Image 1 (cartoon, one colour):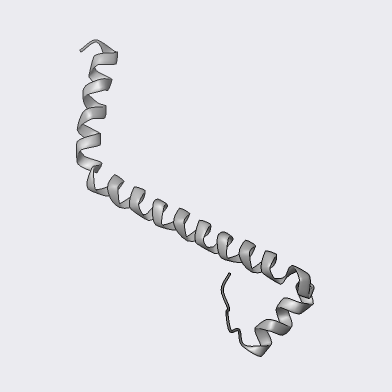
Image 2: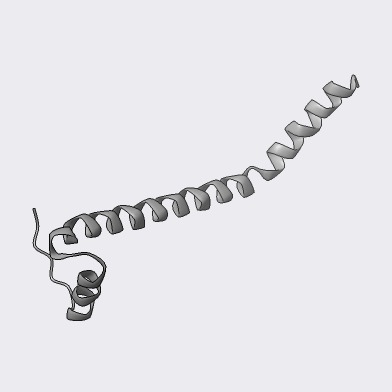
Length: 72
């Protein structure tokens, strides 16, 4: 359990979307969603950077495999 201070406009918005008994559930959902989305973004970024770094190596390996498939 924690105490969080939110700006009044945010609390009003929260109360419009979720009743006072549902605030915690909505905040929990929102935080988890944001963190999950950010995690996927970070993963995509890491995968993209890795693919760029290994581009030349992967091309060489692919060419070697194509030659094997062609029986060269």
